[in-house]
Structure formats: structure tokens, C-alpha cells
Image (spheres, one colour):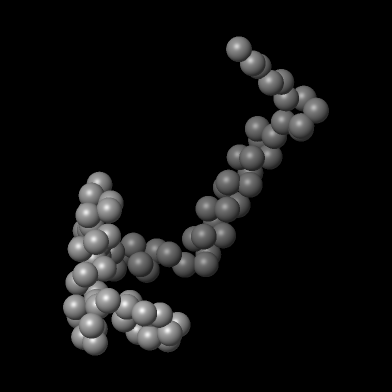
Length: 84
């Protein structure tokens, strides 16, 4: 991907003409620059969780959220800012 991007943008690259060498060098240099970052393998979602993500359930969550916001609503003129 990085090699293709460099070619598409007509950039000079010191990677040589092999795509995999460019990606490996980029990944190595990025890892050295940001050692605190790590990679992980994403976990898969369960079938029940995927099936539960429907438009009706999402609408229900937002209905509950809007009800709670209205219940505890404070207009801007009634708020107080406390500073130390």
C-alpha cells in the first residue's frame, strides 16, 4: 500500500522496487518512532450481539437516552460555574 501511494504521488522512495520491502521498512521505522503502540488481533463478535444490533434496538436506546436527558435538563441560564 505504501509503495503504491508513493508511485501514485510520484514520490521518490528509497524502498527499491519491491512492494513488501517498502511496507516492512515503513512498519519497522514506525514501530521505532512510536514504541508505546502495539498491535492486537481484534476479537470477533458473537452472533447474538450482531443480531441484536437492529434499527429498532438502536432507536429504543436513543428514546431512553432522550427521555433521561429531558428528565435532568437544565437550561443554560440556570447553570452555575464554580471556579477555584
